[in-house]
Image: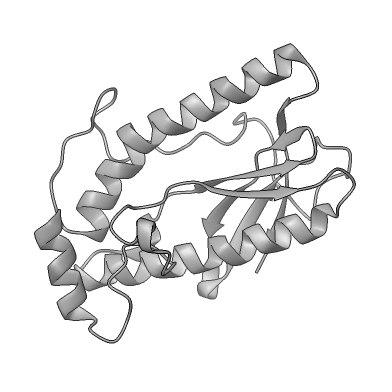
Length: 190
């Protein structure tokens, strides 16, 4: 992977040699797969989703450049999981590449709370699943499509086409920000 990163830096010498959308030193050589935003109880959901959306748009744009640099199709960028923590409640929006360079934010499903033991277990299980998805789906996709490498998945399915399942297939995605009660499955664009 180090050689692929050096080749990437040589292709774009005036852009960060980071594999991410950030200059944060510890993340330069480590592909990020999940973004997390925290807000205090009662702080605005709109601010949290806006910040997550900005990060996701930068992340998707960086992935698009990396994929294009190795001759791939930026349309293969997977849906990226986001996590928003608002007080005790943990939510799961997600970001996907939209048309004309836009980023779609799919929101919001509460997946746990730190105010109850069961909610904490739900948070731990979701974080474990996101780590599994990162190892078995995102890392192989990133290695092949963004760096041009063939690296087998750590465990689980070996296909690079498996993507994160956001919601039941029978749910219709509606444009908007959801119903405001934590159960909306709407979409926002940046």
